[in-house]
Image (cartoon, rainbow, N blue to C red; front, side, top):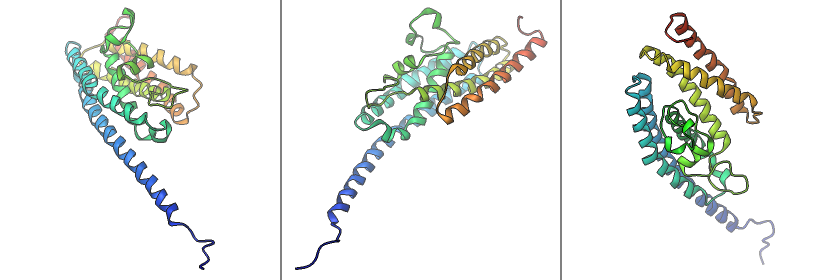
Length: 241
């Protein structure tokens, strides 16, 4: 009788290969949805980029087109991703989509700031342009929960929201300069006030995420950039003191 002690059973590796194949299938299905979302968000951001070369009168058309792109395309992909991803442990696969969700959140925040998504705001004081959509409002637009603590399902995290908010600040700093070339001297003043308020908010936070903390440190430089724009406009008498 042959001595089988110390011999490995091939079934062990066959079982492991089966699990690997199952994991690969899950990743492939999620990746397909994520790639669609990424493509759709690039289209939305291409629309939003026109804000940098549009007059105040033309801006409403940009906002309407961006809002439509989000609600008719991106939200559908986010819903599909939420349904598919919620079948599995959230933090096992969330690295596959977190950047794309941040980008989608940024598109929503930027559109909201420019005057879109008024239906998502609950008070008249927060409607119109110059508003900051909250994490709950962004989650409501996406149709997903936010900051889940007890349920292992797809959701919008605080870190993703804050990362997208920093991206918004970067974009508004650029917009402030470009508004001047379009002859709009009011927008930079409004942007300066908005960025200062957001910067003050970030100073309250005790951030544990290293990458997020490093990015948030850069907000103070965006504040200075926009302040310089407003200062130059003030010297030329182009804004009211």
